[in-house]
Image (cartoon, rainbow, N blue to C red; front, side):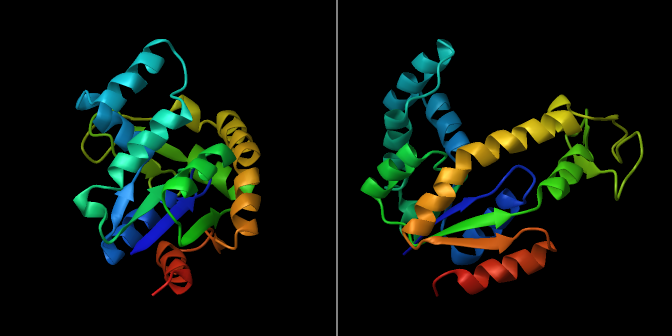
Length: 206
């Protein structure tokens, strides 16, 4: 069984690498955002508890999220292992997670700040099909489907810089936390996708 955590700032390519590793190692790819939405759609007891907080405009408490995680990793598709994508987000969540499951490796995908700003702020979205482009490879006003490309407000440079600063502040303690436990490995995310994938493969347990 292989149990992993992947984290990295917005634009680091964390989701892409998580999908590839989960598929290659035949383990479940667990995004707590997707998991929460599934619980809400299914109107499960935990989903209803989460909805009550969300309806009040409050954050879903850690114990509710951890309850969902505990149920999720007990499902049949997690028998070979699982990969947490962007979770935990705080040291308290990390403590709670390690209380219910061991973790074999934590992969931190690192990309220089200025490269992340360029990656994200250069992104354009199609208002019709939802496709994403980057101005470095496709600098046109319309999508291949005929829809119009637009610049999302949260992809503008000033917003991106703020998002990255918030991320750095919130995850810095996690980097130290997992490093102290001997679980952390940092990879260079400022490389070609296949190169990043190969570096991760060389770190993971066989």
